[in-house]
Length: 306
Image: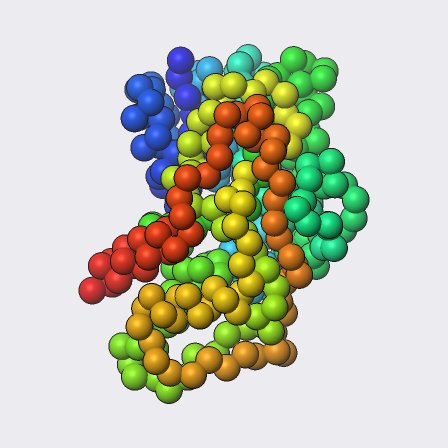
């Protein structure tokens, strides 16, 4: 079996590649973006012609936190939907057996009742700051379902909550909440800053999934699931942004003040997933205790910058 893994150099992709190798898979193709631009269908067609994969795991994405989503809604929508369209259509053209698609919790409605259940994904419009990204992911899911119905292309669609862990993206223009806060507090501690400014009110809640737990679920999805209906991936642990800030502050050892900039958006008010479908279909649940994963992430970043 030859597996084409997109986004293998990214945060999630590195963990998935390690999991595949540890599971005994050896024939894995993982092209870099400078080799093939997945937004360009001609280059995707060339990629498939040269490599003839049996299965595709699609992780490549143009993605970021609230700030990046507000700044780049058009490019996020265009780049991500084009990658999905090109890859799925070429799977059909080149008789690929299976397409594993990793979607996003941003696809859910802004005011979805928690815990979010897969059947609620179409019940309303996503939170405005990341709606373009969430909608393009839902569109790609529909395309995969359509190609299953018309052409018999097997696949699965996994919907992870917010991911975190070592090797996350700490770039100020792209980072999500956990790496952004870790970087901010470590920098404040090292510089002796008297206060740290955080976005929003701190009242919004989030669920976070450790990256290695997500990688395990993705490999199981490739192996077990042939129906591209959405399957939630979450940890079962919900925390407010305010409590998250306090945890990171404590684990970093920062002793200054925290100031909330309420002129900035909170994002979606609440994110917490029902993962019963993943437990039933994948025989999977997250194993990493949140505090342990958070400490691992802080330690990794501290070592990386020092």
